[in-house]
Image (spheres, rainbow, N blue to C red):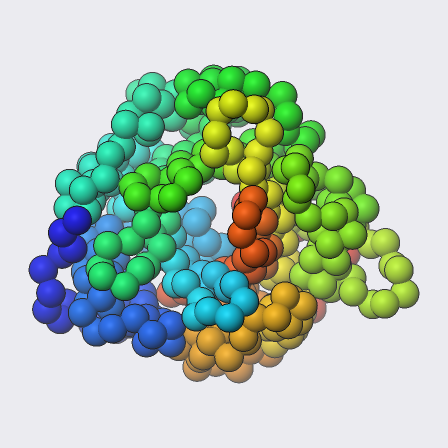
Length: 379
């Protein structure tokens, strides 16, 4: 595999979208211990993904709305933790973010992805089998294509593509998901999934993953901890009690008195990962809690994130460093810097906790003043 040529990237001014997000990425690379050469490679990749909007001043509104984040920044960072190891830095991108229409967004994203496949020497055949499902002539929904890059030493990331099952219409999303899984060889997988309120994404691992996954994301509105505990379909996966504990800690319900509150604002998400086709059963399960909608401010969200990492014996120091790398504001002055908390389980591997971090390039969401029990719009 051939990484991009080494050398310091030409970073746009700090008050542009590219300058703001690239500087954040470079600081995060330092936090997780990635070297200067790797950081430069990944910074250039981020700039390339943004295309012409990289130089767009931040005092202008986003060129097109991106639903990748609440303030429409088309970049999101995350740190993934396992015990006794440095965290892994990831970046989620919308490479078609400056396109005028959703169809153009998808075409731009596919062009960027295929260019990356040539540079990093990975195949896109699994995605190519599904383009008619997820890239129709007149797509619908909030996104066309997102790409997640897991940033590794050596300048060659692992790549995940996120696809929109509602591209052919919201009423077709379940049928689209079923057909996509069938084409990928998971012919009975759809019937194993738990009930959900919406099919959010299909994600595909592309490249040299040890066990490439097809991952189905579901939204679950107005959920309680006991209901969350029953979502896993993975043999030998986490116990309902373990899932409930994650739900309570991340959702701010871990009061120690057995309180059975519901998360009724932004929906909780579950992810079901399929790696082999001999059975219909998933080999992975992840619960995602949108902590930003259930915390008064980011200081509270950080406390829950550190409590979750402590629960699994993971070092909280890099998370604090990452927060400082992204913003200089007081955490009590906003909510949304820490967007989601998740714990993933995969067969044969230790649990993995991930903290999702917003760039806040365009806006800092003010701290919550109203009751956190009131419904909020879902994205």
